[in-house]
Image (tube, rainbow, N blue to C red; front, side, top):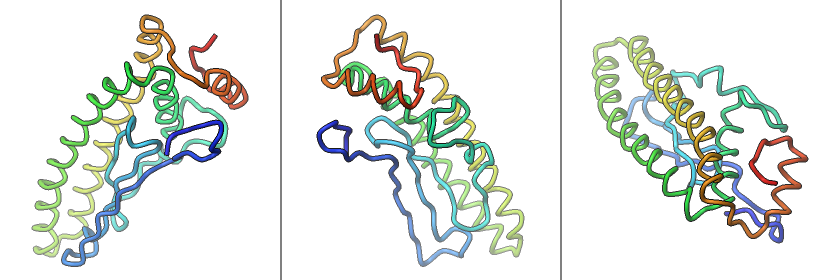
Length: 182
């Protein structure tokens, strides 16, 4: 659900649950997490068993932090809100490629992990999946950081086209989120 000062409701995060009863426990449950609205964010795969979420993904609080993955994502979403028609296609172009890459790598990584499990090498399978998760998280971090630098420059050229600028200005100021709103 999109932000609206009238509704009081909006998506803070999204997930897609990938549940597979026919797989070993290590591969049975994958959740694809998005830290904000799906239309201007990326889904990242995580496993309920074995591989851990990188410690950098635990950073953050209820106030803005440039080191927090949730705030990277939320700021991209807020920047998109300022001129959705112009910025969301750029963001989707970046993240659609990432999601395609992740899904292709997931198939290969899980096939290899399944073979390792069948050979009785579950620890090696966990290490393989951990590498997959870590690589995805590192890639997404680079993309969020790039978009957080690029989108404000695009707004300088394209301008702000957001109906609720005063609301967003007040909210972002109260939460200390750096947005290019005058």
